[in-house]
Image (cartoon, rainbow, N blue to C red; front, side):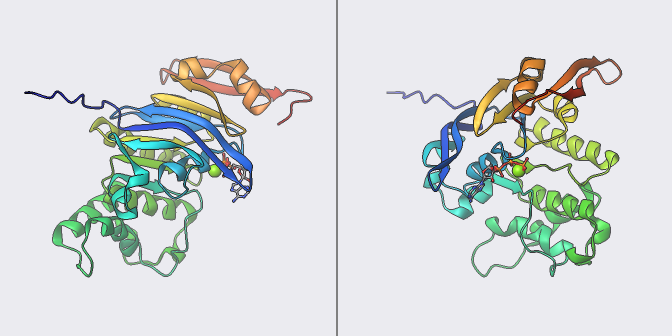
Length: 272
Ligand SMILES: Nc1ncnc2c1ncn2[C@@H]1O[C@H](COP(=O)(O)OP(=O)(O)OP(=O)(O)O)[C@@H](O)[C@H]1O
Ligand SMILES: [Mg+2]
């Protein structure tokens, strides 16, 4: 007898994710799906829950309820190492790394693939070097992280995530410290990866940049989903006014053929 198993077409499925700290609800029933090759942008005001959502998806935080499935498997059933083989997170506030050289940091992306006491293979080194080349960080290889500028450091963290060769890349405000050239370069790198099947989620404050590069957008507001869909569906005057308390003009920039947004003014008596 042939048993037909339906193969999931979703890379990532977050279902009814809820997270609380000391009975304060930081994330409320968030459900999203991402297909192979999609880039999802998460936008929302400071404190909306963007970082919390990414940390839940990376398995760093455990939800109060709800689940995160990657390729159909729940990350709550996986070890930290197993999750790290599938998910790479570039944090908004990275941990202490100052004493390490940039090459050492990028090589850390290979650790989930190495056995205990195993030294890096030639292939691991090749992958790490390729990641440094792609992010324009080869030049910093032997320097310690302490000697790098904020944007340079951020590119090294991107290289570490690239060397993990993840199924899903989570980026928490990846362009915050980058100059406009490196902002474009970052999105081109991420889009290059998604075009070969990786999925990505990025928390982004620059809404025009998010509209330009993301396939889907999620607006989070006070821990809840305000809107989820294509940039065209999500980026409405009403949604932005509700989430941010500002009036905006959403228009199509015909030069780059993308939605863009200009801020008009704060709405008086807005709660934000
Ligand atoms: N351990 C904690 N205890 C109490 N409150 C917390 C804790 N962690 C996060 N919060 C609160 O949860 C809310 C969501 O935080 P989160 O970092 O997810 O926001 P964010 O959307 O990433 O904001 P930003 O745009 O400023 O990075 C914030 O109000 C934050 O103060
Ligand atoms: Mg954040």
